[in-house]
Image: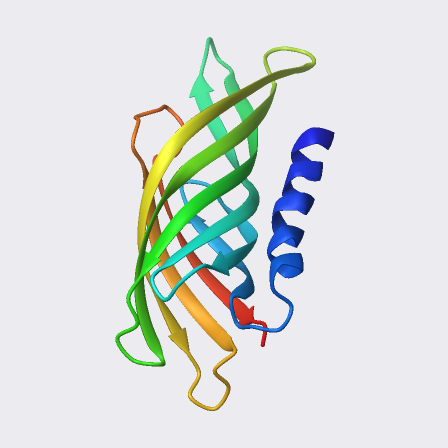
Length: 180
C-alpha cells in the first residue's frame, strides 16, 4: 500500500512541476459509479491539443447481505467489498468548441480488492484479497464553463479489455481545474 501511495503522489505532482504557467496541467476528482461506487482523484498533462497523459486513483466498495434457509434456521451473511485502483492513461481529445471537448482514452489499471464476510453460521470472519493489472478503454466529454474556462466537468464511460469476475465497466462524473 505504501508503494502505491508513493507512486500516486509522484504521478499526481509530476505534471505540476512540468508546467507551472500554462493550462497544460489539470486536476480532477469526483464520483466513480458502476458495480462498486466510490470516488476518483487524478491529474493530467496535455502535450498538444489532442494528446495528453493522466494518472488517477479510485477508492470505493459496497456492502451486501445474503440470506438462505437451512434446517429450521435462516442464515445471514454480510459481505463488504473494497477496492483501490490506480490508472495511467493516454488521452486523445478533439476540441469541437472552447466549451465542448470529446475524448477517448486507453491505459492500464492496477486494482486491489478485498472482501470480508461475517456469517451467523460460523464464528469469526473470512477475508480475501486479490490484485490485478488490466488494460482499459474509455470515452467521454469535457465541458468548460463559458464564464470561467479553467473549470470543467467531465463525464466518461470506461470498460476493461479482459474479462474478470470483478467489475468490468464503470462511469465517472468529475469536476476539474486547468492551471493557467
